[in-house]
Image (cartoon, rainbow, N blue to C red; front, side):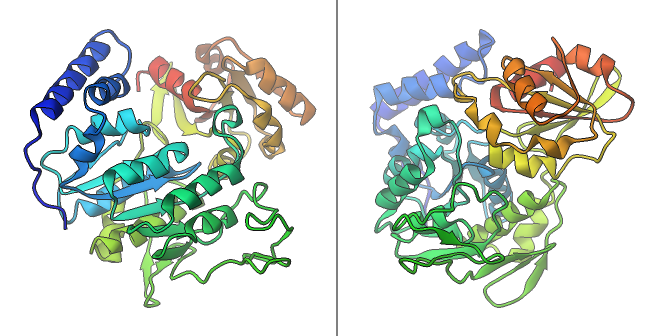
Length: 412
């Protein structure tokens, strides 16, 4: 078990102080939270600072293409039943942002850390986690992160022989292949709605067979492992077969899956499923996601979707037609500059909704919607969309930087 934080060396103290000062300057200049620049400054002064800040913590790392920010928040809430938690709750999930978060956790017992998929192996080496949660892998930011099998291979190599307990989604073949190099894996049947990145076997390249919820490779025998935790409707089944109700304020099947994984993680740290799941009910929104806000006299529900798998899950959350829907897409550095993923999203699911389109890449999105034979209106601003939308609550779906733009506009 991790203990109290040992005093930092003078160099580490200087690095932490300088990082906090840089973050404060960034905030004062209106450049965001400052967590990334603060972490970069701190790591420049002490390259080993991340590991030093984690020595007293029981750490869990959470990585995935989708759902890692929400799952990180749910795990953090569950572990607070056993002690103070430090977490990068706002989603700054690369080493600099993680370093900034841990710099404020000298009194914490647990570190619950979201990690960008590309940096998982390196962060795991630095912080020696007790547990690692792997949720899913799907196409996302292909200009930056390369294709999914390459990411799975990096995970597989980086986690080989790890002492951490790996809690992994048994329904995602890429995750199973990546996690199988680890000696201690807890398999969770969390489901996988998006399957288009896992039709070829990651082990041999053969065609995957997917009868029902099962999957296997007919050529090499690679197959779905038997899970010990199972999401079953509104319940999670633990390894003893007990069914625990999932009561969340967060909507959708994907968040029930996140809760099931979070309960399995909490159990590694000694928090019983009933306690963990009850605490998860406290989470109403995650970094603005799922918030309902007022703007120009209208109610908008803010939803984040940054890749095809995320859009698929989000379409299942929105109210049925004739609920108006605003879509906003950017392609800035944090989003990935390649918008070809728009063609992988089944936008025909929006048929019957009044649709309004904004964002830096609104014309790219407009072409995609035109091909899908949908009626839509391209607008210059959120205010214009709201003025033109028919009565009722509006669903607003945006990718990462577009979502941040919307939050600034509505003052959220």
